[in-house]
Structures are given as C-alpha cells and as structure tokens.
Image (cartoon, rainbow, N blue to C red; front, side):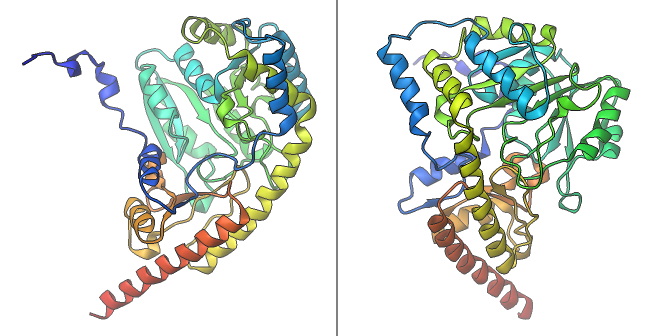
Length: 400
C-alpha cells in the first residue's frame, strides 16, 4: 500500500479556504430533475448574433494566433473609447489597459500584484465569493466589513474609518453589488474616497455590473477627484453583453499597477483567447443597443420579483443594480442554508444561501432574476407555497 500523502504537499493557506457555497448548490441542482434555477449569476440571453458572427468570421479568416499579452491593440483602443464615453475616464490603451480572462482574472491579478504577506485587504460583505479567497491566496489578511439592509447594503465612511489599521492597504469595492443589488451614488462614493485618500489606500473597483443600474447613471469610482491613480478599475463583457462563457474582461489603472498585473498575466495566462477578443471588439462597436434592451427586460423582472417576495412576507431591500434580489428569510424561522436546501427538495427551486457571500449574508438568500418572466412567476408560486407552510409550522409551534 502506498504511503504517499498528497495533503502534505498542498499549501496551508489553501486548506483554510472553504469550497464555494455557490458551487455546492449548483451540484445539488445538477442532480435534481425539474428544477427552476434562480441561483446562477448568468444572463439567460444568448450572446447577440452579430457578436457570435464576429467570432465565426475570425475563425474563417484564420485568426487563431497569440495576441499581445496586453490584448489586441484594436480592442484596447475600443475599451479606452468606451470608458471615455460612458464614464469620462481617459486611459492610454498602450500601458493603462489589459484584457483579461474575465473580470475574475483581473481581480486575482490585481490582488497578487499589490498585496504583500500580512497586508490587510478590506472587503465589505456580502460580496462576490472570489474576493476573500483571492486575497488570502495573495498572502493578505482579509478585514470584512458587514453592510446592512438598513443602510441599503452600502459601505459607510464611518465603517471604513473604523476598520483601518496601520496594515491596511487595499479596499475592494463592488457596486452595483453582487449579491445584494445595492448601488452607491456619487456623493456616497465621495465620502468613501475621502477616507481612502486620508489613509493612502488603493481601491480595486469591480464594476462588472456598471451597465445594469436602474436608478440614474453609474458612477465609476475612478472618476472621483484624486481617485483615478489609486484605483484599479475592473470591468468586462460577461453580464452586460451576455458573454459569460467567453471569459473576457479588462482592467484599467496607473501604468505601474497595470504593468505589474501584466507581468503575472504573461507568465500564467499569456493572453486572452483571440476569438473572444474579436467578439468583444464587435460588442463594443455595435452591441450597446442590445445592452439597453436587456436592461429594460431585467428591470421588468426586478419589479415583478420584488413585489412577489414582499407579498409573501419576505422582507426585501429594493435592488437598484445588477440582477439579484437579497431577501431576508428570518421570518420563516430557518437559517439561509436550511431554507435553500428545503426549498430545493420540496419545491424544486434553486436559490443561493446568503452566507455563501460572507457571514454578513446569513439570514438572506440570493435570487437571480436573469431568468424568463415565466420561470420567475412559476418559481415564486412554488416559493410562496413553501413559505406559507413554514409560517403555519411556526404558528403551530407557538400555540403548542
């Protein structure tokens, strides 16, 4: 019998990172027939044909080679034009922009490029599941700040100030937010910016949902006075253009910061697939009208979902961005994970427990409304039956 022990070869900091709570529920869904899944953070729209056609055409023309580590010059130029037009941000496509394998790679590159062992990375939560593990794998110490529904799940300047120590180095921001759907306006972000400047922090601003803002115009953190140099802006094509599987994003920032990220990128990934880059170029040239149409449909679904949740007695903060709702399930007497497991088992509706996005999400569930109106309506019928049963059980126990 072999005495080989693979476990001892695995780095210790990786052992401390739990598996993704989202993936656990994806696995449960895969093994259950007839499920309506409102758990996936993925548009239900197919990538528009003209974008797919650009990919097909590139293959027909034989574009199957490496590109620059930084990404195709034409795509970087188009991204620079997009950021200038949409958010008033001027970046040089030569040394201030890199094309990445989705926004997720950009987050990983940014953290690995700037975090030394022991540096503190401040992460408001609930948050996207990758931030904290990526910070830990980069050698950082995560400092979580819980955001609250009574504050519209926004980070406050007072909370940030209280969390800062002499080891604080990076603040990760994600607005519009996954999983809550919260947004922050210019005045609210400006209060954060003053604290950032006071304590000489670097900001990693994940703005992947920037086009999905339903109340007013998205404010990019880098557009605030004094914040462009100290912000690594991350965005991409997955959510806005319905291009999740293409795995294409980008990062913009100070030349030294982006250059450091490219150094890691060139030794690990080399470059983003050229076919995805060709599709992204077409998306920026001719795809924004599709973004606006998809946004209108998400807004209709958002209003329907929030009304149904509140009608069944689940308190739900009104999401103003992204395509998620984050209702509280505390009135049912169940914790988030039990609620999701029993809802899946009894009614075949898949949603994600809020604690998958950090301890601050306990008592809530994440519901994606990137699904058809018919699916949302049927899922809400099933969920309403489930919640009504739990309310009756609570009443019986209270009377016993």
